[in-house]
Image (cartoon, rainbow, N blue to C red; front, side, top):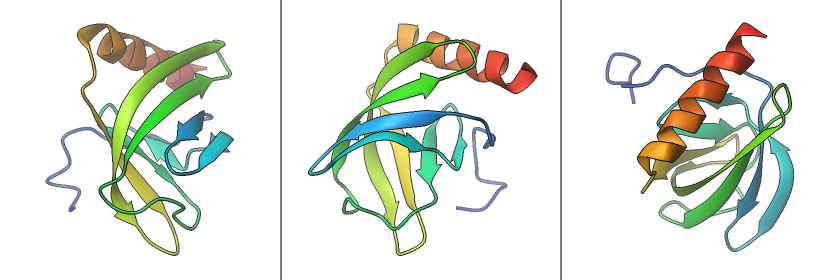
Length: 104
């Protein structure tokens, strides 16, 4: 996806995630995150199209936000996840903690 087509800017922040899919990964650091999804800079451990449950951890504020996602990119270098079925409350919390983490 080109940068021009990207709806939400990617941010490189100190955020990790617990990921539940076919595999369970705990406290896995994110390479970047946006309001629309996130990317892990590691060999993909789930296949494209796989639905996941994530708990995003924001150490700066101590917040944890559970979200659903689907793997949209799986390669030897990285794994991209698009958030889906997010409630308004989850969007609000994600936006709030992204802003707080960005300014800390």
